[in-house]
Length: 105
Image (tube, rainbow, N blue to C red; front, side, top):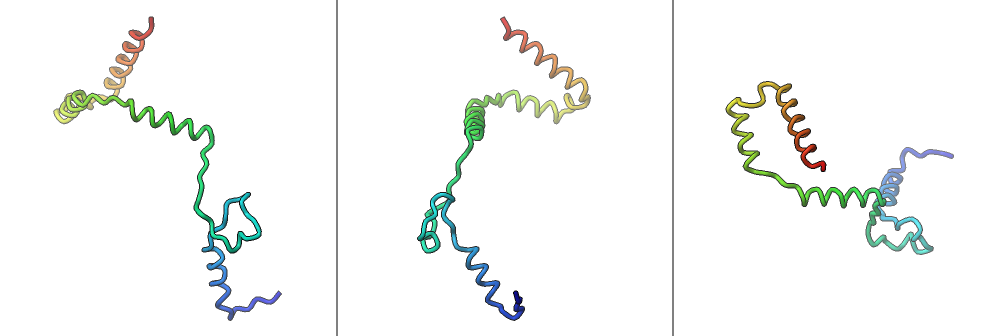
């Protein structure tokens, strides 16, 4: 095989072939080379659909207590919290334990 370095149309032929849309696998027929694809298709796995449903449910049920957020921002700005990360972590764990023990019968 001889490679002709002076054929500039080789690069454009390859680009033309790459730019043509191809039909999805399984839908190719004898006219596939002349028939453009109608559009792309995305199929999600069952795990991905479940994750999408969970994420949508979590976003819809997200309860943000704006009063608590504002109070904590003010406390942080005043230096009342955030000075001792270990104390903050202990307080958060204590609150979590107290809340979870209240929910159990």
